Image: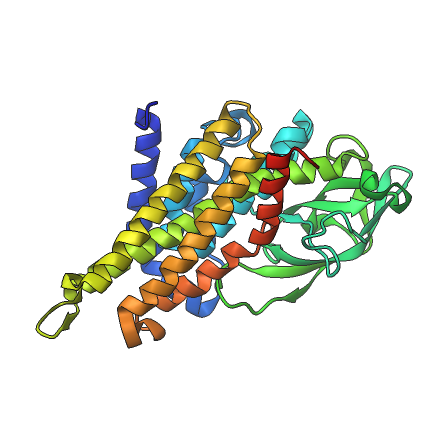
Amino acid sequence: MNFALTEEQQMVKDMVARFVDEEIKPAAEELDRTHRHPEEICRKLGEMGIMGVSVPTEFGGAGMDNVTYVLALTEISRGCASCGLITSVNNSLYGYPVNTYGTDEQKRKFLAPVASGEVEGCYALTEEGAGSDAAALRCRADLKGNKYIVNGVKKFITSGNVAKYCVLAANEDTSKGYKGIINLIVDLENTPGFSVGTIEEKMGVLASGTAELVFEDAEVPAENLLGKPGAGLRQMMEGLDAGRIGIGCQALGIGRAVLEDSLAYAKERIQFGKPIASFQAIQWKLADMATELDAAEMLLLKAAWLEDNGYNFEKESAMAKMYASDVTMRAAVEGVQIFGGYGYCKDYPAERHMRDAKICQLYEGTNEIQRMVIARKLLGVR
């Protein structure tokens, strides 16, 4: 078993790490404070090939593997969780289904601009009554001639306020249950009947917009159907598998930032005449953080390797997302503890890391759902 990175993987990791240290980390506090979409960072990440890491070059991507994606996204999230989230959605929730199920024409038209980082994409799945129960969609897409007429409201859509393109999950025939679900690619800027509704006020990842998408007799060309009718739920589940790797990387990056900041602070904070890093209570917190984060990284790399090599990675992506987000939340809480009173104030990034970490246990399927996925695979049931 070889744990060494290839020359290309190491080169990308180092390139992104430099960009993070030079441009993303210095901007993270301001982005969090102002809730500003980091457009200039997204465009530069696109130029670096990071907004479509594993998308073939002919469709605007970098043509690299998913292990490289894990390495790059972890580094970005170490600098800014919001930037990591936007990058993850472009690559996985939007990029994966279009790249996997789209026709070449659809990829050239709808994937290339997103994978190259020119614009953002999003995935509109969640509704007020369809969150963990993803098959309970009420959004309707009725085929009328050569157009789908879409009616419904989507909730909590990451990048929904800034995205140009969207993969929209809707139900074409509710009498068929989950077999009536389809996915449509929607040009949000050129779709009559579409509007952005409420933009949520959130606890964390504040530079990443979370929006309500409203469709009122919205007209979507029938040629924008992704794959075959009735295949939407399967596409959705496979896309979420890929997305969970991305969220796991986001969590891991936040955890790495917590450890990095905690180590630096523990070495400089003097109490009782010595740095608090010399106290066993602090050392154990740091040791636990480092150990659990390394274990999370191994789970993420394994899931990405399985995806790259054509194996089923549903269980492994659920494990990686669940574990990475849980250990990062623990690390974030301990990070605030290490900083003491300063950790509760905005003068230091510890409180931001704690706010950003929590969402990783919730979206792309709550960690309770991840445990259900893992158990089903272990038991051999659907």
